[in-house]
Amino acid sequence: MDFGIAGRKAIVGGASAGLGKACALSLAREGVELTIVARTKANIEAAAREISTITGVRVTPVAADINSDEGRAATLKACPAPDIIVNNSGGPPTGNFRDWDRATWLEALHNNMLGAIFMIKETVDGMIERKFGRIVNITSSAVKAPISILGLSNSARAGLTGFVAGTSREVARHNVTINNILPGDFNTERHQANTQTMAKLQNRSYEEMKTIRMAAVAAGRFGEPAELGDLCAYLCSVQAGFITGQNLLIDGGKYPGTF
Ligand code: NAP
Image 1 (spheres, protein in one colour):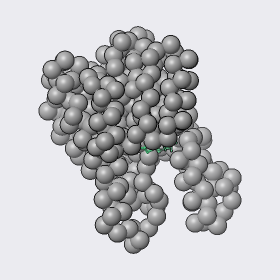
Image 2: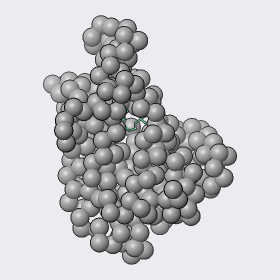
Image 3: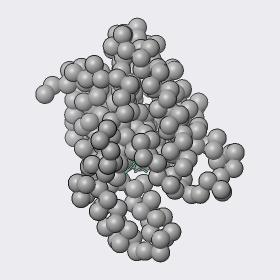
Image 4: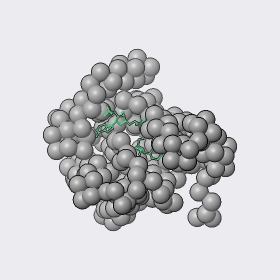
């Protein structure tokens, strides 16, 4: 299927590794010109070279914290009129809510709620004027089924989800969609680090913990980032113009509910 977005311009956050990089690659395969962002200069430049070599599209790397005002400004300077935004960055630390002070909470809200909200605020009116826009926020399955050690994520992402539920309905008539992708367990560096933390907390080996986590997934495996990347590209397609305000769980059937 041709997604009809060749030549469109996209900003993808957190794109030097993991899920963000997979989203960038899937969009590039559709011919989308990319501005990709991560904090570590060498890594984001390497990712840009790799994606450009594989797909032949123009990829501009920006080394910045996408959630900061300066980072967002640098990104929008490189891509002033984006048609597509993938809001993604790192997740908050794991831990116990008894240990989190106000500064820790504000940091989580800054990184996993406000960063995406301000990026939407600064780009959505241009999309409305141009009569095309696709915004995808990478949140977490924790929005639907909270993960105890990820209380900061459960909470901040629920806030972003509420914002999207309202705002997506305001902009839909202009062919601008806003959706959230909720990843379950995907084989990335962050996921491996979380497995390591869980293993320590439960006094188990990493391999033992990994086997337990995999067994909890109905599909019996972790997801591959490319599977999520392709879902993201579809949500950015012309064909997906009637899907908005949705929370799409991609978790190999781990969430046990009927809805
Ligand atoms: P990852 O493997 O750790 O990759 C994170 C990427 O984001 C890296 O490129 C990192 O590069 C970049 N990044 C982090 N903070 C940034 C910032 N402030 N500004 C710009 N770039 C930033 O993580 P992942 O597993 O792909 O996860 C991506 C998101 O999905 C996270 O929010 C995570 O919590 C969420 N999620 C993941 C899973 C999973 O199974 N993997 C499940 C549920 C939710 P630099 O460090 O160089 O900036």
